[in-house]
Each structure stands twice: as C-alpha cells, then as structure tokens.
Length: 200
Image (cartoon, rainbow, N blue to C red; front, side, top):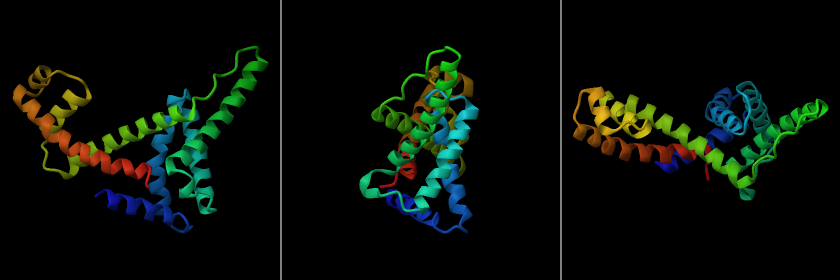
C-alpha cells in the first residue's frame, strides 16, 4: 500500500507541471496548507499570519517546483518545504523585530534549529495523518461508530476505560477490545498516509 501512495504522490507532483491541472494544485494545497499553518502556529504566529505564511509558502513551492528547482538527490521534500516556510516566517519576524525596536521593545527570539523544525513538522504531519486515518476508518471500514468512539475517548482523549464504559453504556472489556481492534488498523493507515507528506 505504501508504494501505491508513493506513486500517487509522485504523479500528483508531476501534475504540477501542467498549468491546466487545477486538480493537482488543489490536492497539494489541501494536503500541505493545514500542515504549514499548524507549523507556523507552533512557531508563535497568530492564525492570520500563519495563513499568510502558508499562502506564500505554497505559492513559492509551486513556482519553484515548476521551474525545476526541487532536486530529490539533494534532500527530502519536507526539508525543502520547511526551508521555504522557515524563510517566510523569518522575514515576518524580522519585520516585527524592526517595528518593535523602533518602539524600544526587544526583538523576537531566534528561529529554532533545523532538527527542531523538522521535529515540529513531523509532529504536525503525523497528527494530520491520524485525523485522516480516523476519518477513513469511520467512512470506509466495518468498525462501528461506538467502537471508534470508545477508541477516541480512551486512547486519543485520555479517558479511563471505566469512564468510557459508563459514557457509552458498555463494558470495560469492550473498551479494551475497541482499543486493540482500532489501533492495528490505525497504525497501518497512518503509516500509509504519512508518506503523502514526504514521498521518497
């Protein structure tokens, strides 16, 4: 399944070279805009600024990709997108720092290092993949809504098995069975979906 995801992602990126292929742009936008916005938010940007950074990053990403500036042999896709977003955020921070210095306030703290930025990006990608995997399970699998609800409450929201059992009028054993049943499917789906954000 992972190879199918990889081919699909590669085909999607190749579709960006066709200026008439609006679907490729929309799918790239749907896939990466939420990640970039969350990434920018984790670096201290307000939602409006994060949205601007996401728009600027995606616009530059598409333009540069079409101009052949992305070379897979020199680095991973995520590193390239992170670099664009980092540059946009740094520019915004510099403008803010200049304004603050004019008002006698301290400048904004330095940008985190590359390893920390990639860790933040990876966390946001995994959370996005988890949300999508949960949606897939709800819409396309034979897992019942109650089983998914038990898993969500117990594993994702941290409620105890007793609390979930009471809330859903079921047994504690059923909660643990739900956890086991969903977790195996979810791991497989998340591993497959995560590749959409960083194809090899």
